[in-house]
Structure formats: C-alpha cells, structure tokens
Amino acid sequence: METGGPTLHSGGFGNEHSGEAIPGALPLGRNSPQRAPLGLYAEQLSGTAFTEPRATNRRSWLYRIRPSAAHPPFTRVANGTLRAAPFGQGPGEPAPDPNRMRWSPLPEPPRGTDFVAGLWTLGGNGDARRRTGMAVHLYRANSPMTDRVFGDADGELLIVPESGALLLRTEFGPLRAEPGSMALIPRGVRFRVELPDGTARGYVCENYDVPFALPELGPIGANGLAAARDFMVPSAAYEDDERPVEVINKFCGNLWAATYDHSPLDVVAWHGTHVPYLYDLRRFNVLGSISFDHPDPSIFTVLTSPAADFVVFAPRWLVGEDTFRPPYFHRNVMSEYMGLIEGAYDAKAEGFVPGGGSLHNMMSAHGPDRETFERASEAELRPQKVDDGLAFMFETPWPVTVTDQALNAEHRQRGYDEVWEGLDRTFPS
Ligand SMILES: O=C(O)Cc1cc(O)ccc1O
Ligand SMILES: [Fe+2]
Image (cartoon, rainbow, N blue to C red; front, side, top):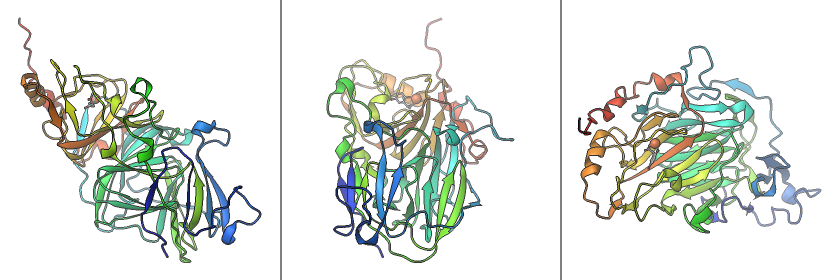
C-alpha cells in the first residue's frame, strides 16, 4: 500500500530534513528510543564516516516496518551492460584513449527492459573499491521495475532524464524526475523506478567519491547558480507489502540480489542529511560575462565533488562585445563528457543530438565545429538569447576510459574528427 503521492518539500541542499507518513512515527529528542514509535525499527544509514566534520557529514535515521538486516544471503546476478571502475584493466578492455568520441542515442532496448537492466556503462575512472572516481552510464527502459528494488553501495547516482519521466520510489518517498530535472540518489538508498510515460532514456553520473555538494560562490556572493532551497526532498511514504521483493545491490562493480519477504520501501518516517533530491535545471540562475569573452563553464556548475562536476548549459543571454561567443577551442586537463537533454548546443551545428553524448578526454583538442566557428566569427554581435537547448557536462579530473561496448558500439559516430576539418589557415603566407 502506498501512502501519499510524490509530494515534495523544499528545505535546502545539505540540510537536516525529515518526513513522517504517519503522525508520531518520527521519534523526537532521540534517534534510538528503547522502543521506536508504532513498533517501527530504527536504522541509521551512514553516507560518510561517523567522524566526518559536521558540514560534510551525511547520515539519516530511518524508522521502518522491518529492519533491512532481515534478509537471506546476496548472490551474484548478471551485470548486463553495467560496468565499473577500474576501467581498462581487464583482459580485452580498451586502453585509455585520447581520441575525441561522440555517440548517437542508444538503440531501443529489448522489450521488458527496466531501469536497472537498461543501465549501459560508457566509461569512467578511479576505483569503486577505493571510493574514488566516477562512471558515466546511460539508461533506456521500457518497463517499470516490478518486485525489485535497486541500491548502489558503490556511489551516489546523479540521474539526468532526457526522454520520459522517472517515478523514483525511494526509501524516503517518491520523486518524479522529468526531462529538464535531475535527481540525486545517495549511496545505498534503495529505490524502484516506474515509468509514467512508458519509456525513458537518460544519463547517470555515478559518483564513487565524496558526495556532491553545492559549489562555493566566492566573489559571486551569497546568491546565484543553483539555490540550496530549490533542491526538493520527498515526503515520507511507505509500502506495507508482505510479498517477495528482489533487492539488487551494486557492490564493488557487480550486481548481487537477495529476495526479501517484504518491500524494503517500508520506511514510515525518517530524518537526516543523507537524502534524495530533485532539482529543476531551469531553476539554475545562469551567470556569465556582461562585458567580453566567453567565461569558463565552471560558472555553470550545479553540483561539485572531487570526482566530478555537474555543469548545465541552460538558456541564457550572450552579450559579449568583440567576442567569439560560442565555446572556444581548448585543451583541458579535465575530461569532459557532454550530453544533450533537448534542442541544440551552441558549439556544435549537428551530430550532437538529444540522448547522444560526446567525450573529450584529458588534453584532447576540441571546441566549435567548423560551421559554428565560421558562423560565430562573422555574426553580428547583438544581444542574443541562447534558448534552443539544454545541455550538460560531467567534468572529471581524471581521464575517462571507455568500455569495450562504448568504443565498439554501432551508435558511436566514426568520423567525429571531421567536424573540425576545413578550418583552413587564414594567416597570410
Ligand atoms: O567543450 C565544451 O563544449 C564544454 C565547454 C563549454 C564552454 O563554454 C567552455 C569550455 C568547455 O569545455
Ligand atoms: Fe570542452
């Protein structure tokens, strides 16, 4: 039985939140009363070390019908198209590759593919066993998860829907993530994905590392970029289902499953800092240059962590005088995976399409394609609104090693280098 729909409340990213599906279910004044209210079991879920400083400590207390501990052994199940760090080290796995790469959207999945089965790993870095680095996944699904629930011990999941909404039924309550929003599921939090539109497609940044946080604002001041209060948390809702439910646990890169004799989404009340969030990317307060030059895209950072920044290219005005306005040519120590949620991106005239993606690895030279370069070099520099698309970037300090399936995918666009062909010399000889 589900109590409550996807009602949300604001309360600010990183704050102490709480939820209570039945009044009185949440203990007051202590976390572990001798007997928790309503016969519930108290359980702590720690996302950071117990001793982590207050500002970055993440933990929640869950008050549930049955303790998560009551389960039979986990056994290995097939990983499908999911892969994990370390990448590029197993036999036959591609070595880190400096070439620029671009992909068209994933092909349609077989009928009956749910969110977990539809996860397809593009690549990543670090090592899930050492809690460092990140992975880039895409997903495509045409079937809701039924009688199974997923939890990722390896990291938090930043989910970016591109097509089709996701109804994320989490231990903390439901979140409905539409294209144009992002959801953040903390490490270890269990959830089931339903598909209100029947099908869904999108991107996932799996962060093995220190959890995502809002970036500091420095000279920007007290406001701007993503506002803490725009991160919504679910209202508590629980399932009281005594039926077999398979819990899939992603652990050190592999999938393990155990069948519980009840739904583990049975949390009646909770409080804490280790909670799922939903954020509408159009709430992002875009800042930029109002004089000249194209700012570095770090100004568009929504969330940051040591392993990855999540950067959004949202509608904005370009007013730079005597300025080449699209992204400049560059070589970057950081590695850039980009995806497109809708429309077009101002550095690429064609080929970079919604549901597709590009990878510009550490120090690989990239920037505007020839067509964009020529157009922007001649453009009349009136104030111009860029509002025909929504793109994002997962930017990571370490090279992204792609998986064999990504390197050899039919939907990888061979010949991507050609977009920079014909940038002929104009320097007089
Ligand atoms: O390569 C890209 O398109 C991403 C990007 C955008 C930008 O505005 C400046 C630098 C950069 O890497
Ligand atoms: Fe770039």
